[in-house]
Length: 297
Image (cartoon, rainbow, N blue to C red; front, side, top):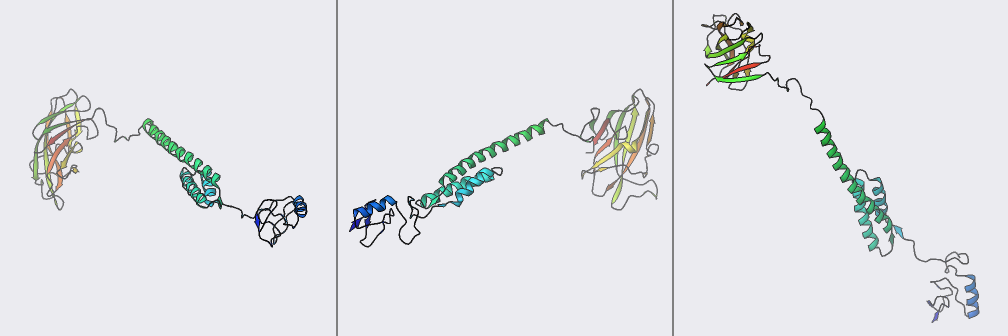
């Protein structure tokens, strides 16, 4: 049994080169010393290394692909998605490196990827919350755009009563009307053989008594200002047929001097099976101002 005089490695009798340090093994101390002065060389079977160059017999370590990917994704960020993947891949890489017993490297890359990933995830959360708050602030501070239909007229007013009761309504030219929806005629008969309702419908008449209690003359049209709401929730407008026993004012036109009064009927066609739930009248042809509403119970 012999040993390497350079590093002390145990050698077989027929070995001429130490596999640990590359020193030639001589039979004499002088030969070994001379060879040692030349420096270690590669073991037999390999290409000789230049004098003074150490030769490693250990294979090079591989770098973890997960560690590299973790670092790259941590840098890219991708709105926090890359950061989250960087954290996951970084911990996976560190686990692989630990299990490899030194065969796989890249621990530093994995740590850097994890660090960048955590910072990126926190940054994405903070930025998202900031954008949500900014959007809410802008929404609250932005002026609300409303259409004319959405904007109520300050002068619009609806007064409610039962059929047979009077409601006072302001009109143009300082006129003021006392309007009574006196009666709902249901069903109503046509004034002649030419006045017939459509198939599946019937005539319904509403008898109005209108007087002018204001200081100005009233000019309006009852056909344009009157409507009914059916039990089905639908609004029905005037039909221009005449019914028996009640005139339609002067084809709907009404002219009333102060203290003047007039009585007439407005006619509607209502589907069979639908009853009249409410009657409405607006003295300004239904366009604006005060409206009277009578419930039909």
